[in-house]
Image (cartoon, one colour):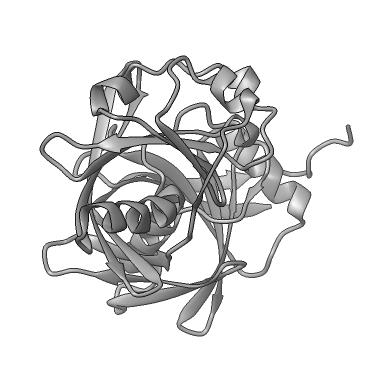
Length: 272
């Protein structure tokens, strides 16, 4: 079997930065176990698989351990592959997913604008396991698709040392911690041990919750976000322009190609 494969750094203007994703365009869907094996072999935060349907594409995302219900940076990276390799005639592409249609448009400055659903959170009493998994107690905790823990300052948020084994036992997909920014609107970090992502570099799906949350707090629809992490063992910060438009969020960022090649093997994965 031979399949094309592209690797793209999303939300960055230079390679070795941003958040990496692998993109695998297909003629038709592969067996789910095979797609999971490819994602595990790639060992990147996400591998996206695409199947063309006219001018649109169906999309599915896999972490090294499971299929993801929503992923922002791999969708942005998929649009990069569509615009540069598959359909350079397009200025906008729609990806059809389990979360509905996701639209990505080219902007005049070279960025790609990702349109995702705005997702709600509600304030809750923090689960004991969540507090045990965070080295510093947050000022408030909210829940939606993920847990969202709010801190008073960006410095305090950055000082959190998560216990990933404890967070692994929570009943939500992941944990986002967030705080007001210093010279930007808000900051965040993202931990998803269930998805084999200990700390993500930039998480578009988490911003589906964060953008409406912070838009309501600061009273503006256009925001600047920074997500903190480490990459290649070094401190790593990604900044993105975010907008709340009705029940949708827009996240804009640059993308850079890193690698293209071919997946080539004679047999499927061996039986366990």
